[in-house]
Image (cartoon, rainbow, N blue to C red; front, side, top):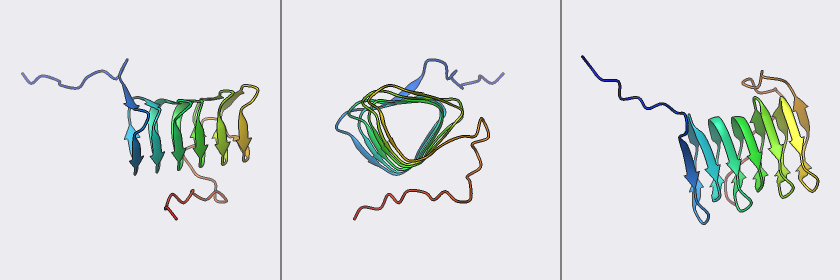
Length: 132
């Protein structure tokens, strides 16, 4: 009888520490805590938390997000996006539920499309993450 080696995803999460820079695409099935910097896309099937020192230059798609840091790109959240008072967002957001604390900055448009966020609207372009 073969053993099932799959671990349950409950309680598991990934962490990118302060001072760490990652260039490329991240795909994760579990929660993700970001205190470093990412230049590229992030696809998370759990919750992403971007700490005060964390930043993303690229697009994010996730089930839930809580942002304390900076994002320059398009954010798609299937359920709830929370922008904390220190958050700075430059780019459009597509969400179902949005919570914004006083002091948070959003420079872009907001569309509340509900849970149908897997299809990209025709007029939305991806952020170019190439260094100049």
